[in-house]
Structure formats: C-alpha cells, structure tokens
Length: 207
Length: 102
Image 1 (cartoon, helix red, strand yellow):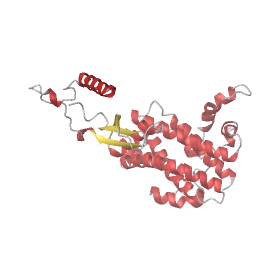
Image 2: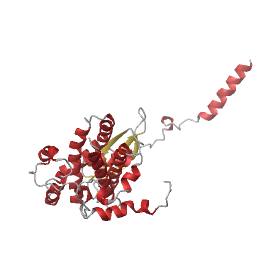
Image 3: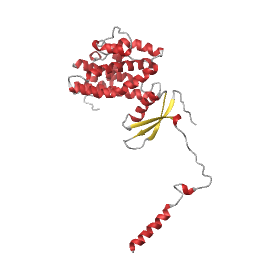
C-alpha cells in the first residue's frame, strides 16, 4: 500500500482516538466511560504504530504538519456532541476499518501486513464493543438518524473500490461520499488543541 | 438483600484470575444492561492493565448467600479453633527432644 494511503489510516486512527477521548469523564455510564476511553487510547496507539512505519519520528508526523496536510477522512473529524452520533460513528468506523484491515493483512510488504494483523487483534475487541451497542440501539430512531447522517461520511473512509462491502454490511444504499482530501471545519480547532503542547514546548524538550 | 438492579441494569460480580492455575478472586462488580455489556465493561475495568488472565462474571442474582450457622451447643471440637494445639505441640517437642538425648 502506498504511503499516502497508510498515512490516511494513521491520521484516521489518531483523530478518531482524539475525538472519542473527548468523552472521557462525561460518557453516559461510568463503566462505558472507562471502556470508551480505553478504546480511544488504543486507536491513538495504532496511529503511533503506523506513523512509526512511515517515519523515524512518529511525533513529528502526528503533530508537526499543518491541518491541510492531514489525510484523515471527514468522518473522524466531526465533533459530535451526542452519544447517539458518537456510537453511530464508532460502529460505522469499525465496520469500515475492518474491511480496510482485512485487505491490509494481505499487503505485499510484510511489515505492513504484520502490523495490520497486530492492530486487527485489538480491533476485534473494538468491534465487539461497537456491535454490542449497535445491537442494542439499531431500532432507536435517534440512532438510526445518526447513522443516516453519518453514512456519506462513512463511505469516504474507504477507497471507492472497497465501498461495496460497506454498503452490504451497513445495509444502506450507496450515496455520494464525503471524500477524503477536503477537510471539515472541525479539523482546524481540533488541530489547535491537539498540537498546542508540542508547539509551545521549548526546542529540544524531552518527553 | 442489597439492590440487585441498578439504574441502568443488572449487577454482575466479577472474579479475576491473576495467573493461570491460580484461584479466581472477587475483584468487584459491574452494572450493565446485559451480559455482553457486562463483559465489555469488565474487560476494561478488571483487565486492561494486564492484571487478569481470565474473568468470571456472575449475575448477583445467581449467587446464593449463606451466612449463618447455628451453633447452639458449643460443639467447639468441630471448629478449627476447637483445640489448642500450641500446648500439645510444645509437649511433643519436649518429648522428641528428650528422646533425641537418649
């Protein structure tokens, strides 16, 4: 897989992890708060692993680019203020991510394929978590509305040729995708926050 | 009996095993709407730092409480504290010591 595509995956994981971690301390149930925060942390860990595959300095790749240089999909950038949308995104993202990882496990580059396998073993648990919420909420109108609103964004997570499976798994008809490459207005403020500490640190600071 | 149903669901008691072969010990509880949620949440609360190799989740309702034993006739010979072994042990040691001297 080419570097830009890998960078897209890493950026997705970083941004979705960052967004989901915004629920830390305020998730609807204490137990879910712990679980959701832990999953968010795992996603950031996956981003780190993929950045490390692409660069000697994963932090620089994660934090020293301008917002325009990120390859993240608009789905992960959205700042979602209610739980129905947050869980809808989590579920849609996990379904798309599984399709993407399954392909990546067959990558001709053994380092990429190996890492995909490693990430997938952790994602299996994320999928279990997302499916459990989906099973419980799929008949709820608020959740259905959220899934429908996010659907064009979910399609944009995958390259066009991989979307058929997503359509099949989610059970909605294919619509025009919100494509990767153009960012939502939500990214810039997130980037401000995400890179603030690194930008304000004195040169040569060690972490 | 304490509350078995909390605001969002059932209470599951969680037992965790720290290493293979060791006994499961009570770790705490989770409150969850069903067994799948209980599993997901218990995994995080009692396992995400590698502190467990396995968990048992038991709905609190499935636990039968047993907590009192009638002991009206002071049958203390049945209890582990029934005999004072200390004095007997001392005696036995002295005997053994004396035998060794011979």
